[in-house]
Length: 347
Image (cartoon, rainbow, N blue to C red; front, side, top):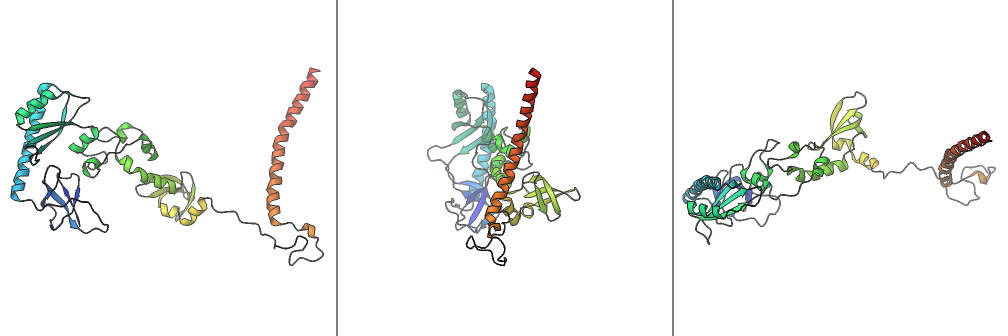
């Protein structure tokens, strides 16, 4: 069985093995972390899955009243530490922006630890800042600089699509994104259109790119003639998310959206692949070269019977050679006439 929990509302989901516990949606449970068990909210109740999933952390049980009180105190401490960190940074005049605060009190090596995540345009000398923060918060201080993508993941927000940021909900790792992916998806190469809340290229360009590659490899190209249930037409557009092809009908001129399966039926795919061969010319029955074919009078000369293979090979060659000779001879004649005219004029 598998269950999902989240530390923040509308935050990233973490999957656990419920073990012997059966929490319901909305219950607070204890999740094992590197810094000790933490309180999280059950988002998906334990349920069976079709595939075997292994290696999931084991749920440590339902959170008690003591655990809930400790979690509420830590939330208040994080809020107070954020205010103090911002004020101290402003006093030192450092170009730093506080992104997030994490408070740890269950690590065996330290009593209390405050981790401050910040973003800065360049490296910052924060040695004096650490001493002042440690004196004000009375705890051990760690400062960690993060990039633009990590800043958006920690803060959260709404993307250009109107949904919660992918990095803050389900995306775990950041993979490199290139402008070529935007070109393959027919997106405008406007930085304002293809950039996310972090100012970098949107992460969805990466994990949606294989879908566009598969669609473009199987769907008919723009301008190609296709057969649809509504009649013959020409492809004028693609709609990859809905797996449809926009076709302009030849009879009425109107546009209709057809499923890719209707346009690219197995027979049409087979014909478009180029594996079909033209209809073969009937081949004469095999026999001795001097013998006449069956059903032919004995008076017919044997020399008139030519194998079909020879006929099919000979006709294209004669036609090709005749056309090439005509194309080659015409310029030669013109050059000769022109040369004769120049010779007469010169004389």
